[in-house]
Image 1 (cartoon, rainbow, N blue to C red):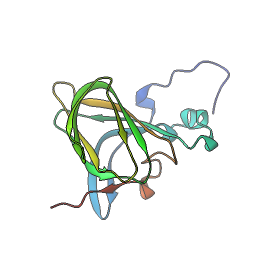
Image 2: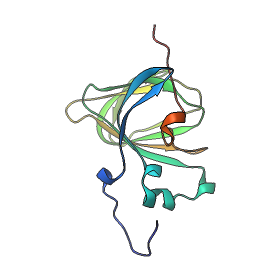
Image 3: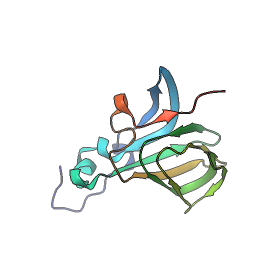
Length: 143
């Protein structure tokens, strides 16, 4: 619930998930903290905003497998470095912004020495993992 006071919500107070099951297989997410999973942050995002926001962190060499989802996403690199995987590949550095159209294959790997921390924003629906039993994600089929 929102208060009339300025509030600081520590990152650790936003509940984390570390993996998701899709198609009967578990997929590693790194550390994923969807703002909608915290009552104050959820209350700060109006229902009619159609907006999902979450922190995601990958340790060095940790991989979030290429996947796709049915909505536009913007991934903002806040700390560290890594690489983009999927339909487009390449290095990522602090301050880079990755725009991922709906249905495009993308994934990430954390770089050395501190991994990759991003802010993931979805504009059209809800957070990708807001409902972990009905995540808005499809992982790429393995070869």
